[in-house]
Amino acid sequence: MNRRWTESEIWSWYRDHDWISGCNYSPSTSLGGMFALLQEYDHETIRRESAKEIALAASVGLNSVRVFLPFEVWHRQRDAFFAHLDEFLALLDSYGMTLMPVIFNDCLPPKSQYREPVFGPQPEPKPGFFGGTDENSFDTATQTGKRVGYSVFDEPDMQPVAEQYVRDLARHYGDDPRILIWNVWNEVGNSSRDHMSLPLMRQAFAWLREENVSQPLTAEVWGAQMPDDASYYTWLNDPHFFGDIDRESLALSDIVTFHYYGDYLHAKRLIALLKQFGRPMINTEWMHRPFGSCIETHLPLWKREGIGSYFFGFINGKSQLNVVWDFIKPYPSVDQTLWMHDIFHADFTPYDPDEIAVLRACNADKTLPDSCSVFLAPPSGGSCQRR
Image 1 (cartoon, rainbow, N blue to C red):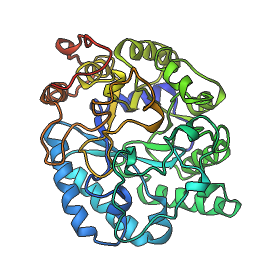
Image 2 (image 1 turned 45 degrees about the horizontal axis):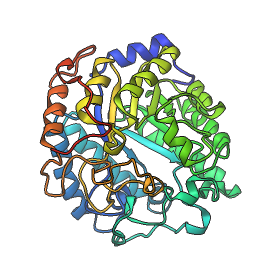
Image 3 (image 1 turned 180 degrees about the horizontal axis):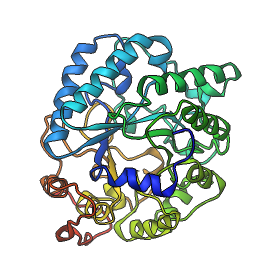
Image 4 (image 1 turned 180 degrees about the vertical axis):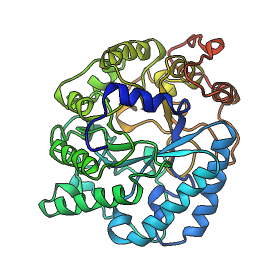
């Protein structure tokens, strides 16, 4: 569609689909994630491993995955990028699953830590760090505003490349039903970038609409313009909007997407706040056991409210998504013995079998509206308990 969808149009689209129940997926066997899957090097090995993981996702009833597209592979190995992405889409489709691709991202390390992506064999993880590396956007100094995340698109000569990238994606997949929604930008304003990415985000939305893609477009609400990490921790207990960055994302988006890692009661408060915009909602990032964001409580909440779901992580692997973000490590109230993300060990055994039982129960019937109210009791403590 070459304009923003009306409320009537997006509700009609949403009701024509099953309830969305998915995860944020990255192949667990390589630190490179989707980069490793889509590059030329040793593709068949990681493809086989990913096929097993997607089969597991389908077996627990997931019907969609959200992935961060690796621009660098498109830029330097375009043929491999599209051939391998086509293959991945075919794999998903064989299980009745769809894809939400993330095109741009503001969760970025500062320029002093920026490293060109490594093609070929991927580096091994550094133990004890979320993402498998200490060069990430989650360390305390970055979060407190002392260092600004760096994007290659900050360079003036990258604007035409960004446009080519967006239009190329649109021309390949703009009418492909295997692509559910375009997540145009992940957490715009994060990594102390503030308004830096807004001009390109506006352009990206415009380019996709000029290409007349058939899928909805979105950029999520996540609590932008928080001055430091302490404010983020406070925001979990008082979810609200922090200014024009989130509001611009809402104004551009066809469908309301949001990220929220807070507990059950405050998640309900955020839902009430977002309902004012009158559009369907999807939580594209959630599940943070130390913060009390739990499958047992939150997944039934999203389903009862008709809100789509992509919890963060899936199979624990080299990205070490079980490790808490660096900037919350000093918080004494955060139980860091709990896994932050992921629901399966590397051998495919559940982290918590009760989580899988709730997941299967909620996914058994994806018609809208529906309820899993039998599971709606909030946890007794402030965080999820491993059983």
